[in-house]
Image (cartoon, protein in one colour):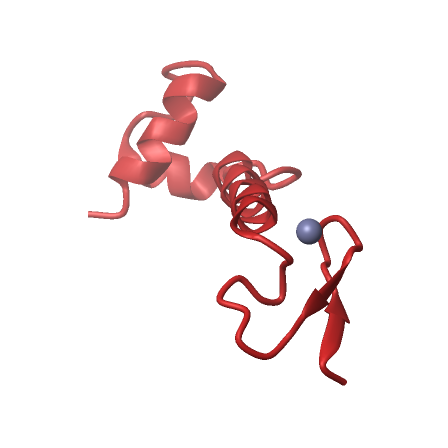
Length: 76
Ligand SMILES: [Zn+2]
């Protein structure tokens, strides 16, 4: 019970008193965090709904790059 496996590298790691749990080290924790952030920014498989883009007034104005920017802007 005192030991868990690091979800990142699979190494056995102490659970109690481990500031990086459930990871074995700060490195594994950072790697995992970056993975999450990368996925969040990429938003794979979720194309912006056309209705939302049209509401922003930029429908068909530009490519996917500007599209993601419009999505951020439309949060206002
Ligand atoms: Zn690890």
